[in-house]
Length: 319
Image (cartoon, rainbow, N blue to C red):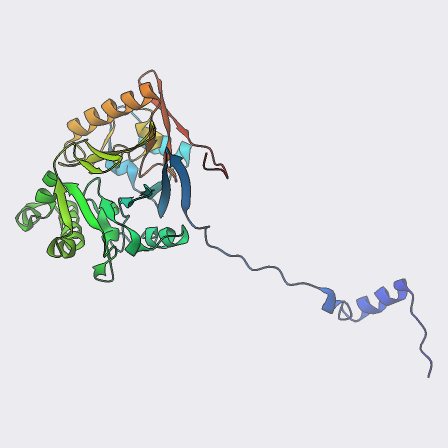
């Protein structure tokens, strides 16, 4: 029996008649979706220091109920800005020391957060390489990452936090008298710091201390009793890591007088924010803010009584 070569038109007709079966081997399955974000780290240089912003994740903070203002329609402002809350820590490699400023939430605030450890590793470091951990304050989204599965996450690190902050949050007596939300903050601080304290690795400092060559503590009380800003300085360049001086950029940049329920002294927190923001805008100082959109690094400019946030631009070169 002889077979004749079919024309293209005839081949297509046969394929259609057979329901496309002839062409099936030529089809390709759709590529599966990844459904995960890229590793969350971003590097920049401050003089000779390498700073790596490390994302702990993002969350939906109920800011419309937490922010305190009688002058603004906060839900409308939040909706207009499509706002999300970032949680970020900052790793400073001075060349001699590896210093982590704030540790993220660890296991204290649910599965959407707690990613700082993974992002530190993705950035090329291991937790046991960290020499010093500097804490802006003792809220769970700043010190929760100190512990992992009941063990010290940074076994070779010395933990530094202002003495007033340590004294306040490590007090079981104060915890018993606190309201429900604040009581959980006490519990998180005690659980996160006790192992380091027992190991002799918790070193409280006095306001204004020079903690590591090139990193200085600056008093910024109000949000908590010992809230601290850290100034990172090298070769004439400066970065202020400001912790919780701001939580919700969509509202508090427009009106820095707006406070939040987490502030222990709202009047002092408002005054401290205005002081640091005015100075940073005047001096064109680079700042790193835990809760502004990752990596949370940029500058402020003054616009009347408001401020404008100018985030750093992404570059493949660190300079």
